[in-house]
Image 1 (tube, rainbow, N blue to C red):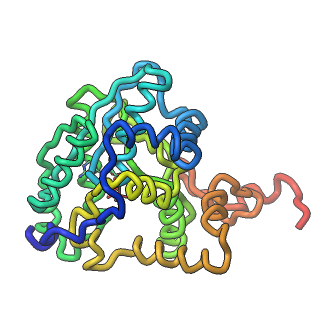
Image 2: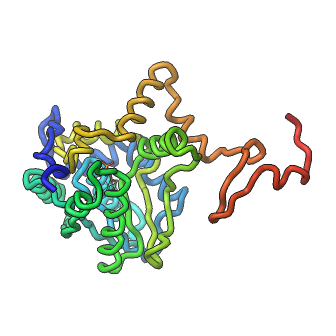
Image 3: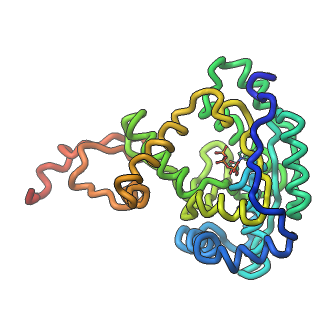
Length: 292
Ligand SMILES: Nc1ncnc2c1ncn2[C@@H]1O[C@H](COP(=O)(O)OP(=O)(O)OP(=O)(O)O)[C@@H](O)[C@H]1O
């Protein structure tokens, strides 16, 4: 248990002094209008992430992504269409006390009224597996978050995955799992009736979030555990580095990976699955002729 919680982690020390809350909030719709605010609004509109009367549970880890997401939702209520309600939930996995303290302080300063609940994830994961696989932790956490959201009467669970998480997932699936699939901007739960996941940071690049966090002098949680602290291996970290390397010679490689999953040419695919059923191009081979 202590192993996976680690001894705390390196804090992401900002170069700038922490700005007053009002300035931080204002920077979202001024300095970061193009790279953050407009992309948040684009995802909400394009993917129809919010409907009238939605009760949204915003999942907060205390990291830079989910804290920004909380502020974006609050700004949307102020400057946009106020047709939804918000709850901010934190699943305490068994955080090291220093980490938890930092998270609580940050949320207080940023006026994010969090509800922290004990999820016991580190204890469970230490019992079932010695190599702490991230996917297992994420799965247990997802269940705990859905449960809490439902208990609070919410119908949506907002997660802070961003553009880079999306392309890393796409590449991970190709390189390690041998399938082509990505992280979707919204998803209906198969286990929690009537619940949906939404990912409003879908178009926002991680470097914009890092810049926002640094500029405003926010000290986010850098990691929750040893895996996130990069003290033990993670395929996601490897793929992140690979994309960074590829970008050195082809600057738009990230945008191309992102675009590829909304631009699949079904006439040039060997096989695919839909709703659990497998198809082959041969199933449709005699239907029509195609030029090469
Ligand atoms: N302990 C937690 N409690 C509540 N929500 C969480 C927790 N851990 C993760 N999440 C949610 O899942 C999202 C993705 O989690 P992940 O561990 O990949 O974090 P991340 O990419 O480092 O993001 P962040 O900077 O928000 O921590 C987070 O942005 C957040 O919305």
